[in-house]
Length: 113
Image (tube, rainbow, N blue to C red; front, side, top):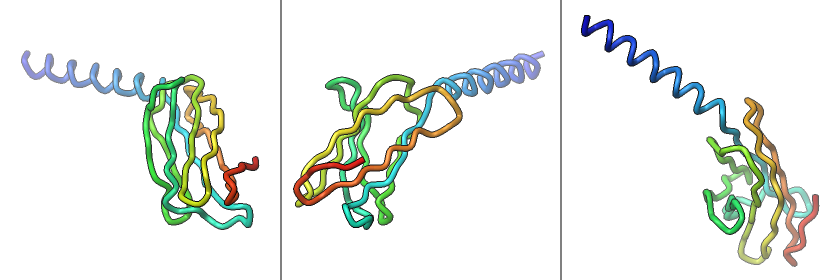
């Protein structure tokens, strides 16, 4: 009897984890300069309004990602020494698909799509 209760509890927990992960999305992309070169070491921050949700630094290929992001509107803020800052709007949906936002930055801090 105890084994059945334990197995039922584990099954319910697995289902709840699946439901929770199905209700979040992810944001990923690459940061490059105006020549198309990767910008490793760029600080990428994900904001919901004025609230910092998460922060990461781009890898050697200029890539970044945020996993388990609840659906909603966010702002991505990118900053790198000698390149200034850029901000992009992001709409995250609860789909299995990853929201990809790639940015280019120039030395003056102007961004291009």
